[in-house]
Amino acid sequence: MATETLDAKGLNCPLPVMKAKKGIKALQSGETLEVLSTDPGSVRDFESFCKATGNKLLESDEPESGVYRFVMEKG
Image (tube, rainbow, N blue to C red; front, side):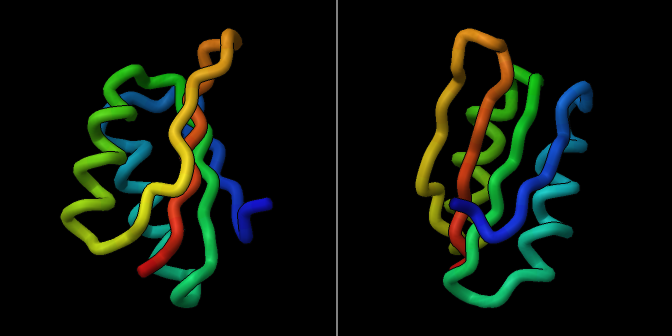
């Protein structure tokens, strides 16, 4: 289970990543942030975000509901 959950459903690029950046900044190293998004571009955006910031993308999936789910661990 993630330390924090961020609901970014209904937001378009770049807002989900911008909100995640703010959310993960508030966490301690090793804690996790779950982000829920409906933006299809989020998949690519979160992969790039984690590589650029040194955070680890633990999970990335899209259930049939159309809601993308990402779990990141603060590096």
